[in-house]
Length: 248
Image 1 (cartoon, one colour):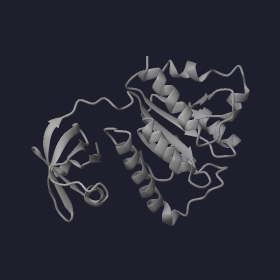
Image 2: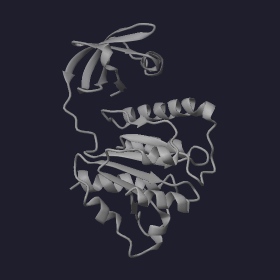
Image 3: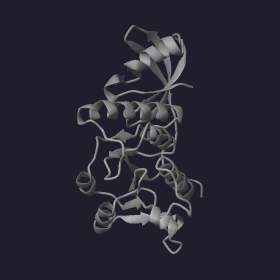
Image 4: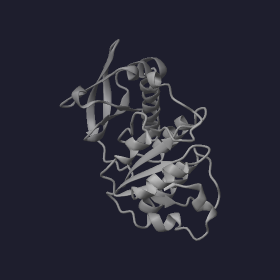
């Protein structure tokens, strides 16, 4: 069943109003009619089964039939800091990372990032990534859309606070058999924790970045014995974390 995220101001008692691009999707793409049922997601209250009452040019009016009891979110809040990469790699990370339960994404201009963002186009790029996160949240039947932050520099990242755990994925850890395993890191994480993890670009982190992370209390993470592509590493981590905290 199609799911749509609806802002708080569009809920009035049992009445829900859908607007924006979702109206076109409902009327033109899905070709729904009054009487069709959809799932609307309230930012706080969660999912509700709704019936379409009227389809207008710019809005779709719905009525709440019943609130749904869903538990689709990771019990741990995970912020993925992804260094800029070539092509659509960042888009892949946001899409798949959303499906795997990440709660926030931070694009990071790493020292060795080959890709560079024109500062005049950052807003548009972030808006596109936010749209990808929204669509992936709907597809994976989540009850929240991850936030996509603006572009971070190293100094911005090191100012981030209020995390229970801060990690960085470091390729050298994969080459060192005596480094702490990912399993040993994950067993320390508990439901309700807030985790931030940084992943490097194609060329890895610079020595300066590695030292800055360590000096700020970030723990290196060993993502198995193989060297993973930058777009694979976040998915490996999220999958492993999900197994640890959700599939016990």
